[in-house]
Image (cartoon, rainbow, N blue to C red; front, side, top):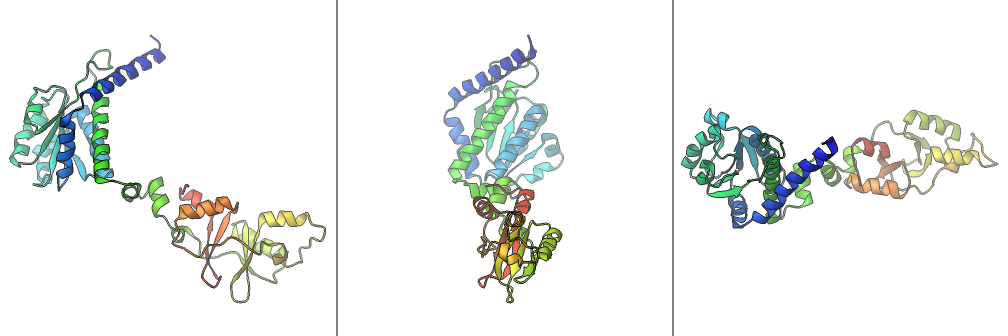
Length: 321
């Protein structure tokens, strides 16, 4: 069998496991969601081996979607980490066999805390399943591994069931994009919803000239400023025009072009500006793209320049529309 066929077979086995599990979803899943939702503290996830790796991912997903959660290893729990579990917490314990020795050893101690225990196992009659207050089956007909030994379909199902718990809890908590972004300030959504213009705008060493500055001097300032633009200010430091490198190129095509003429003669006398430095950077990007400009001057109520926001700064910061 060639690699392509093997891949298709593996995906089919795992897809079949998910579909079969979908048909088994019942009130136990709803009880598991209610149990975790009602928890005032954290949802502690635990498991060993591949189940532990999947459990760590489930804990991370829960934590990032509104359900405080973290993962502890059963062995570490026996050597002090049980102290991380409080009276307001619940535990989600995972073991496909339901008989993992390290996990089974901590179950009596968890029950001693008299906190809810949700279990996930492949055998409903296993020790783990019987210990749990709520049991979720992660049984699969077969693993994708040809030896039937390496957890494959079962770990895929466990991961998917953990996602299902997280999504159900998100909906129950009415968890919105803004909430997600607050937990992911460094991600693209967080940046789009929280980064403001004044977080990124440049305020020092701005390329500025006066209204009577000759074009040849303005071009030098533009080159030194490395923003592809020059801000033209009047005697009161108010913005009266912006000269871009594109304006200079277009000026070269004019019959009366002169390097000694005032830069203002070739500048845009009505540049797009923004007077709200607390505007979201993503909204500023939309302005820049819609008006086909590279730089957005930020001005005060009197038209005096407070800073500039350049397209390159937005791109480097990872701001997207």
